[in-house]
Length: 262
Length: 136
Image 1: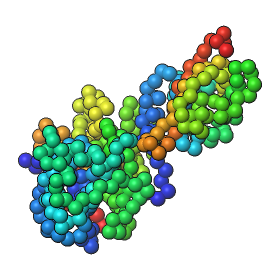
Image 2: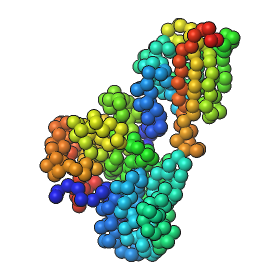
Image 3: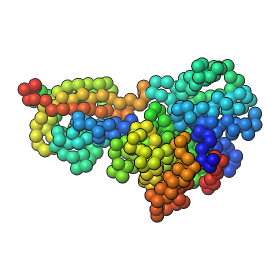
Image 4: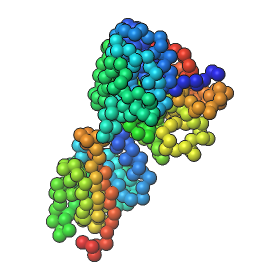
């Protein structure tokens, strides 16, 4: 299997060794197993609370080591804080142990409206179009930047080409980034029967990246039923749509893939 | 992202909803700027949104001549949309409006403030329809 295997989790390391973790899908379990029990504080930036993005949190080793300071950032709902919302996932019948019973030295943060910094990395978070409170993130450091918008339906019932950039969900997050991780769950043929599900077709992903002048598009959030050959076909289609746009040709995210953004 | 303007997602979704409705819909941001009205509203306001464009609060309240049912001028704080913006509460009412095509119409308007959270006011959405002059 070349594509898939875990639900979303992206490890971001700066040149100084600072670690930021984007989403806590099942992939975060393996990452946690590689981390020391003590060390600098860890920061996990969660886009939203659909299970595929937080499922690994309960099995993330630092949650079970009081020595490691852990910070979870994510979206509040209009009425409830992030902590209240995540606590539900840490309670029966979804999990046998209450959050308060874990040894975790954890602090939950509702993301601020204004940008903030973690170890020198500037972080911008904005709500994006996806069912339920959902964020996209932009990370910037020393002139380099990446955007992470894994679950996103950038337009609903209107044409992306007809909209001014300020009316395109997530546009400001992705504008001019070196690397854009973006939802590409559906083919163009599949999308019409899945409008409103909160995910993009390959055409949406490419159009969005081009409108934002992203330098490289990484197709993300593959449909669980998609075969490796099926993902290859989406990549071929993305490259066809990308045509002569500047920057590197689109690629599909895969387990363990690395990018140098500098 | 410095200096990049981006509409709040609640406004983006509201616009997408409005663009699918056959009910006239008018959307303003938290500062009162008119940021969108839909095709059904174009019929009543007398000009397409593309032609009229976004307008400041002062702009749209002066461009559309608004009157009380007795024909006296209606101030912003009496309009349902103005109440939704200024007092941040829902409001409903009737008024006379002379659109950009010069036609005077009796309108019923329901305006609702948009809050992204309990403390984050992002704008207002108003749905309106034409009433029979006999209802004035």
